[in-house]
Image 1 (cartoon, helix red, strand yellow):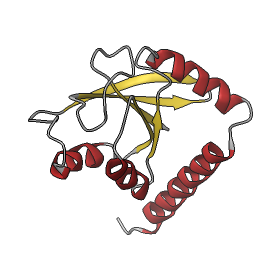
Image 2 (image 1 turned 45 degrees about the horizontal axis):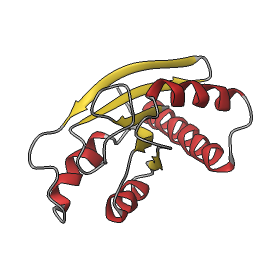
Image 3 (image 1 turned 45 degrees about the vertical axis):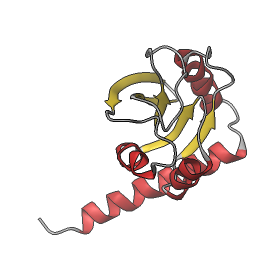
Length: 139
């Protein structure tokens, strides 16, 4: 599954979702994690009330399951949830991305909490349906 982190330094979860100029994306599985890419955003991102700034971020996170943030507005959180992306607030702006990733891998190998099990089940169903669709598509 893909996990995203709002960051200003590629080390800590230290950026507000709406203001973030960078979002790092990782692939996470029971075997470990791997950095995939940094999504970059420009413009006046600190402008409150400008809902248009959220759309490119939400669209860029289409294949992510979770996005970790230092803070997020209610409107942005609701829009992410509607797209089946779970926003999670970091414990502090000092929390390191690699610490969260390591704990996530351990959780996946252990007993994930109910909300994460539900997300994983939805992801597995989507993958299964995608495969069925591919098999049914004439070549």
